[in-house]
Length: 452
Image 1 (tube, rainbow, N blue to C red):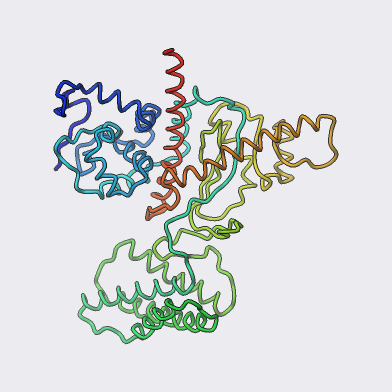
Image 2 (cartoon, rainbow, N blue to C red):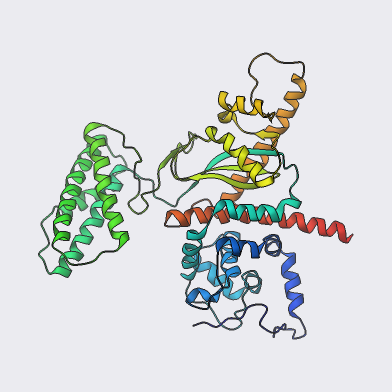
């Protein structure tokens, strides 16, 4: 097993080009960088306790301390790189090693899958509300205007090919046929006759067409439905007579393939749009999220209702099922007050939040908003418009701007995790990496003012 040293364990000297340089000089230089500012802004002990991590020396993950495991997740989104590239950079970058609380020296980490193992472990222990409360408690002295919030929703898309009915049916057919071949080979049985080869050629030919007519699409869909139904029946018979034990992932996919057939068959023959429509055999929890955008009317991934306090973002609600964010304004206000322990007096939101129910709620609680006025103007209309304009500017610039910043600069444009818990963890660390850098810069600015 790879032997590494924690920062507190190895000697405070480096044998670089200048042997007189000390550990403190390298570490101080690290703290001046953006990565060092993130390091100083994170309450490591509180996060370790919130995740319930134990410092154990068993298993490959012991290369990283509990603090190092959490730091590795922040580092991935700061560097915007794959797991393999993350480990490659970590092996040769002393500042990244500082951040992850390790010193590799002349050794290297060769198993880049350790990042995925740590991600899966943390995903099972993540409690968003508890962890965000710890972060806010540490950051509260650098957050102003705690009684003013802005709220909006966005979709963080999963890394997924654009789903069509033909693609989905073919994925199910191909996966079932390959599993049937393996099962027959293990049981030394003759492979049942199917028209798989014939329809594989036709599917490939159809995929290469630049103009896919409705007639050809319907013909191929009808044939793939019949073939999928046949393969499901054959697999049921083969599994009953088999003594092979299958993994939970295999059973999940088998159940998903059957559900896909039911949904697509009812949609094709009865024109009934399926509820909780499956768009991926690999990730059946993903649903179409209709956003109504001109360029991208439908997105596939997790929808997040996000609240922002003085430019620092928090997750109010996250779901892979579509939801109406306008119905969550009341919950958002209560969530903000739970975080800050301060009564919310100003809320900024777009027109979708301006329902009659929400208007009654904000009026009852004396909350100011930038909603479009209903009814006759009062004598304070000029002041109301001025305040609404300031709230709208704050929401449109900082909150909506943070969506693009998170997706472009913190690796949230396409979520490449493969399970529901790890996708949520991916989004959580991507969002709070940007928060940590902003808080770190505010801390550095305060320190400069105090030093002057």
